[in-house]
Image (cartoon, rainbow, N blue to C red):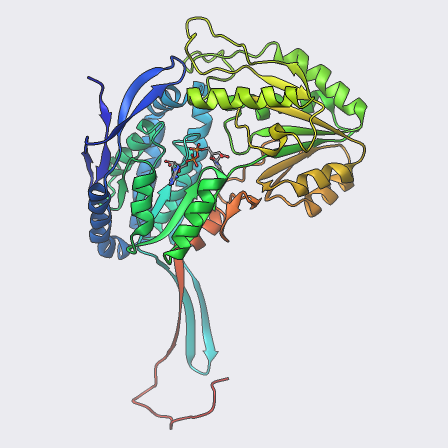
Length: 497
Ligand code: NAD
């Protein structure tokens, strides 16, 4: 009998096995385990547990809350191999890539360790005669996070460490496609000393999410996933009076200027386009080459190095990337390559027929390079989320920037050039939230904040870092006067100035 991945409620693993869903090993193309899908009753238990834990956690000194995170960081590092193995088995990413994901997650825990500093607020002495005024950052209460399959460790850690050190209680709904690493990480936080109920994990799908969105006891929702679902979550959460940040999909372009260091650009693009099978919201999926010479040079160099890419199973670290997440997703990615071909693009390197020896049923697609892509093509308009790099050819940098600015997504972008003035103009005027200059994956570090523009983010505040602190707290401003003895002054009816 396959084991069922359960929920973590009030510090205990709970299995409500009424409804379950298969979890696949994508390299084998076979069921690896099953995950419980939380019923409304299970969601209710999680909310009740979080509600109960909140008053005490809210009043726990920030330094003590931070100490739990210091210990959590140690446990994450001590159990790195196990976490990476769980990530690889259910997601398919190669162990070195899983280690990178985990490290970026740990960096958010490190940032959360600064809670006493982050929550100090602001103070003004003598805001008026003998009047002091200060602003403090209070927790919201019970907040929820809903996360995607592609970063089962990192994206949850964009959310719950910071929410929790800010004094909130958190309910996490991880992706049902690869729940094991996330659940294990939540158990480690309890091992680090987190009181019961401060973090609850409910596995599930739409029904579970809808139950969270409908409940008025949940004050805020952080979401990361695809754009249609992000928009749905944002609309529903805000209609129900919740604060919401909903991060969506992407189509990230790199402009290749004629003066770029082409060897460096080709090399950087390999990892940025094909790493993690292109299943990253910051994956670079479109190259906009300024001038045919830049396009031809880049394609020549990339074609040569793409031949050497190794695709296979997660625990062979010679591999560069692994399978896609599901059979349906594999078919979808191949469908986009087919459509580009049918609409007149050139398939320069074709990964559609790839078979990995010993893993013939795995959901693999090989690295694919498509040239002469046009803005009207389906493969350009949609987020493919696979190991597919598309090349577009334009004559000027302005045309390249116009393409990017016209696209519905605005998550990440980058420019390869040796010209500082062109790079400065680009970063100043491009309609995208995260910009790289000769840096293909400009994922902000944990002490900045992560977020796209346009339909890549619904809401006002970006994820983690300083925006994360703002998102998970509400400001209260207190103005105080202490008369020296009794009320010495007479009443004043003028507006205070
Ligand atoms: P998804 O939108 O299918 O699922 C995300 C979460 O929403 C999951 O927990 C899922 O269970 C839940 N969900 C799915 N359908 C739902 C519905 N109808 N109602 C309520 N909840 C629902 O996304 P995914 O396939 O897991 O992840 C890939 C997507 O996430 C890509 O589009 C990628 O760009 C995006 N992503 C964005 C960022 C970012 O920071 N902008 C980061 C990582 C991934």
